[in-house]
Structure formats: C-alpha cells, structure tokens
Image (cartoon, rainbow over all chains, first blue to last red; front, side, top):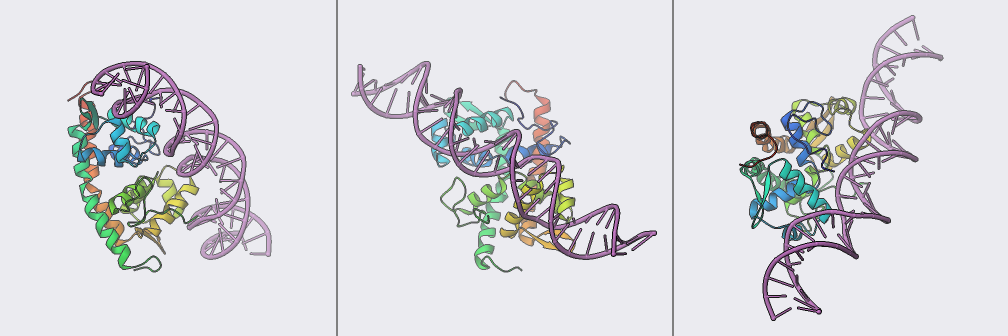
Length: 118
Length: 118
DNA sequence: CACTCCTGCTTCGATTTTCGAACCACTATG
DNA sequence: CATAGTGGTTCGAAAATCGAAGCAGGAGTG
C-alpha cells in the first residue's frame, strides 16, 4: 500500500490545495518522520540501528516512514545504510532553528511553572 | 485527558530523554499541530473558523490540539479567538525556512520525475 | 416571547494509524 | 551445524483520528 505519500502538487491530507508547504506539513506531521530525519542528519544508519536510535520504534512504522521519505526523495539507501539526500539535508537545515527554539521554550516553561499566563 | 502533553523535561513519545527538541518533535509530530500553528500565524481565529480554514478538520482533534498547544504555552484564547503567544510566534518564525524549502522541494520533484536519483 | 443563527466545544461509534512481537530470507563467522 | 547480524514483512491489538450529531450559551429579529 504505497498510497498517499505526500508530494507537492498532490493534495495532502487535510489540504486539497496541493501547496508545497501543505504537503510538507503532511509528510512531517506523521509520527516519527521528523525524528528519523533528525537521526539521519547526525549519521547514516541501517534499518536496525535506526530503530535502536529511535527508542526501538515499531519496525513496521519505520519501514513505512523510510518508504515515504525515499519516495519524497529525502533519503536514499546506500551501502552503509540510509542517508539524507541533498534535498533531505536541506530540509534538516531548514529545521535547524527548531533546535534553538526548543531550548528557549524549555527555559520559558521552567521559568513559569504550568499554571498561570503571561 | 490532560495526560501526555509534550513538554521539555517530560519524556516525549519515543524519547525518554526529555531533551527539549524531542518534546518539540513529539508535539509538532501530531496530526494538524503544525497546520494549526501555521493558520494562527496568519491571523487569530475562533474554533469554528479555524476548523473551516483547516479543511474542516475533526472538531474533536481540533479541541485536543488546542488544549495541547495551550498547555505548551504556544497559543492562548482571547476575545477575538485563539492567538499565538510570543513563544508561539517564535516557533513559527523558527519554522519559517520550511516554507522556502518546500518550494525548492516541489521544484526538485517536478524537475526529476519519480524514478531516478541525483 | 419564540425563532434563527452563530459560537465554542463534547460525545461516541466508525475508521485509520501505530504498535510490537514474531517471523522470513539472507550473509557471515566459528 | 549453530549463532548472530542484517533488512525487512505479517498481523492482531491498542491508540489516535474522524466526523456527524448534539449541547449550552449569546446575539439579532419579529
């Protein structure tokens, strides 16, 4: 069932427009997708190693995600395992500020404990 | 059911580490989450309007997502509807490069039809 | 007053996605 | 031969999502 891999120009889940950013949000909004990209950005990895790095995520979902990411041309399987393509590296780079943000977020939430509001 | 809202320091789905970026990937990796942030970044919106903007996404999930995003301090309900907090605006800004990337992605995929590689 | 229309949700059964242990096929090493 | 590693697939169970319907409240109209 290789149906419904998001691609720009293809209507995304929840967006009939086919706008590229909607396809991207659809693809990235699936469980484990960003995590897999994140892990591969640190080092290429084979199937089993990737699974171990992602706290032993379900192999069936990993298989599905790898198929989707490969279909989206973000990763490719080489001799030494899965690698980000140049398009994939580009995406991870675009996602880079997210890491910095997450630390600001952590700080903001710890400064003001869960309860009141700005 | 206020269980399992991702927060930095709290073990995320698929990451016991509690590292901020993992909590962020968990939160953002839930269906519709990024889309809701995306829509609210354009203009504040009430519940029903938000639902309409997101191709009539399921109201139950919208309700859940709004709770999660509010718990994460990324949005807050005002008189004129839901609004991004400063933390939320910061996140959307960090996600900004994603939009530019998605267009490069779209171009790359249309240049080279699904089949071969780099 | 009643009636209509909007709002922000909640409820709940149906559908889809994810989970995870088991399993298959293959290669290598002892 | 056994044992261990690889890249996966299979399939029943659990969890997440869907979506139509409903509820409560507020505003406007006649």
